[in-house]
Image (cartoon, rainbow, N blue to C red):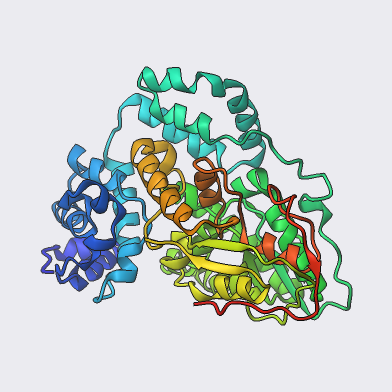
Length: 448
């Protein structure tokens, strides 16, 4: 693609990076076939190619974002399916992130939108505030239909996504109850506690901790660790995202320099994609660039890490598992085989989902900011899942788990919960009626 940035514009590192990304695009249109919003709406401006044109014109002119640009960029899920499809290697993620930051700086949204986005940016990254918000949402849930009728669809969506009950992180299945390694630790890792996941699903990290402990791997606590920054980053709040990322880099660097670290493990793939991009985010900040790159190099998705361990299942659980590849995992990190192989090796019958490349509609805060499109994507995803007729759905991102669970009665869990269960851990929620059998040899399906 031909670009027309001035030399003064190209002196800005962000604009120079955007220019390189834009020039890689050859207008082939392959991306349109795998873009969820284009599949739903059929509008060229709601495809990656169309959005690239809009971003190019906006940045070249150096003008404030227009309402048209904002509408179509807001509809983008950042699912990154276009990056998997693109034959030219266009790094759409960095381009759309830059566009969102430009929109945040130059476009004044209507007051209700500003309030909602500010509320999400303040509450979601703070586990204490998020827990309080969910408790309030449970009480207010009966008024969701009225709110939607009155035009407050985002508030209605937020209430409907709130779980019926919250797990207590101090109970035995919570984060605080992770066992100590049974043998002298061979490796030291940290396990990102995160923000949303620590409130919605503390059992996920608890399961990961138990699996790691059984294999002699020490999980090191990290004082000062917090939200990875992804939530505010995708809202265009660049300064907030960098501040949260810097805090994590500093906290992990202290652990690395104090006693070494083999990996930074992450059970929420949206967070993993963000942490793996810290090196790029701080590439032009000498004071933190080296530490950021080191952190990114250590970051691993939990399935990516466990797939390399000699795990031994202790009970047969011949369930059919529909594996949903979270967009941030399959497109953002290009991790597709490891989770399925991990589950297959544990004895589960793993099934791919039709249209598995399409997003479920969660996408961070998307299901609250674009509830109608998110609902249509969830309905499409659930229909495809139910075609497989699984006993359980496995998804490697807490947002996907919450989104899909709101549309189906089939239990939705994280793959690491199933791995922990197969290795002798507790039964995941919703699967209490399944009977396990002790085994020494398991016949498994080959993971595709």
